[in-house]
Length: 130
Image (tube, rainbow, N blue to C red; front, top):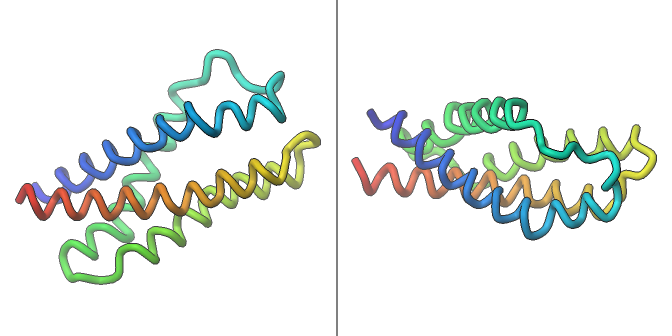
């Protein structure tokens, strides 16, 4: 039951925090630089597939080992977030004409922070609930 609670609490944290950031910061930033290229409305299925898989990978690689054995949590989560979000951002910047460095920096750093906060919250909530 612990893995299910861990996944659910991590995913809930991730989705809530990312929804806030997307609404308040990322959408205005991306609209300013690549507005005409943005899908309207957004494509929910690819987004859902990413979120479900990303959280599953985070739980499997970082959160579950930390919960079970006390292995490090924050730094590995930050690294995964920087790598995942950085891969998207740096690749987009290298091939898209209007991609802006401010998008790269903001989203890459957010990926590290979001991933670490979500992993920490998931483990902390799971310990409290089980």
